[in-house]
Amino acid sequence: MTYTSLHDKKKSSEIQLIPGITFYAVFLALVQMADTDNLSRLERAFPEVVREAKIRYFAPGGALNVGEYLENFLADGEPPPREALERLFHNARVKAGAQ
Image (tube, rainbow, N blue to C red):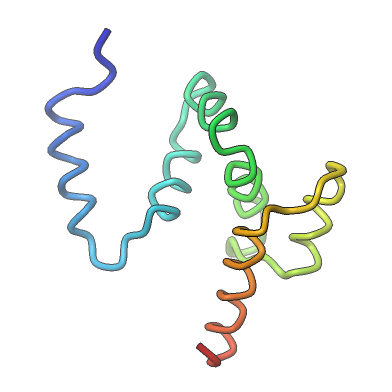
């Protein structure tokens, strides 16, 4: 079975050329575009990132504050992954101009 097409390959090459594009930017787009089956696959492979994407989807302007972010993870009875916390605090420092 083939999941991708030549068109998909060409489009992926175009996406790579977008200045400033990051893995997580593409991932957020994937989550938003995914049908039920593909979203389920993404959730199994990257549960923390998909959870964050869903939280961002409903957050005003997609921005998270630290308190709400932690509250959403802790509501599920588990701490957020270290990588997610590091990204969150890095983004807060950049936003504050202290990169």
